[in-house]
Length: 352
Image 1 (cartoon, rainbow, N blue to C red):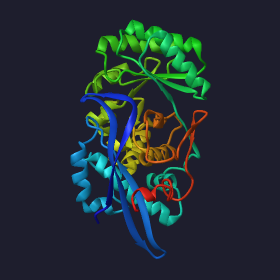
Image 2: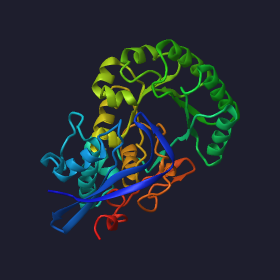
Image 3: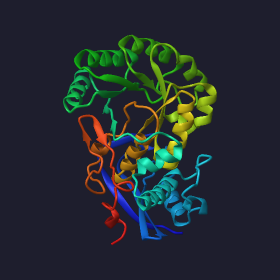
């Protein structure tokens, strides 16, 4: 079953730095599928927004969607191994699952929770604000602004400056605002620096340090655990995979990006395995459009755990696919409770 595809391009509010250079817009494809049921034809909408370095290139994504594997069309398909075109699989699988949830009259979160064998999904998801690299004054100002907007959780980017400078920035934020602070180094440190950082952040009451070492350094990540601050992995999930992270006992927290994992169902499967091993899942986006961003909120609501997620990313876009179906209000996102992902709100973007 070939889907209906609609290309789109979304401008970013400011350039995004990636390993392949800065990007200032996100190119993707809306994916539409139609299923016949006893009640008539039911539609489903997905989004495939590849991010090179995390997923396949756009051309490979589009090619995969024009000839999708038969297995992607089955509602009960399981992700299994990391797919070679995760963004394409995400788009198609989201469309299939959206149609299934609409047909059954339940939210995507309820469908995903049932697939994972989890309890009823949450009605809202706490989210963190991301504070980028900057001077002490800029960092504190951004943190105060986020807290004033209702955020109780802040993620500070570290690793660009010296460790001494980052410690000063984080300490200043801890003194300036009443919020839970987590930091993300994006694999910037060596083992000696990471060990020093972990001890210092533990003394400041930081919630967790995300990717303090390069993604393949699983044994080093494992050695950093148990020092008074959580160790989170993000890039390690993409590079090494969930099983390797678990085998190495390398994390307290795992950051899951549905687009990079190959779909909402793949993210739910990963979250179940991680949670069973005592690793808390945190769901984030790859700076996606409204369809995929809403789906990530459904995933976060469905999976176990109550840590704040990295889903407050709509503001990183200067343009979007439509009105935001999952706006942030006082540091929380309400989970859409109608049938499917966002109901029929964005169907007109796929079917004229």
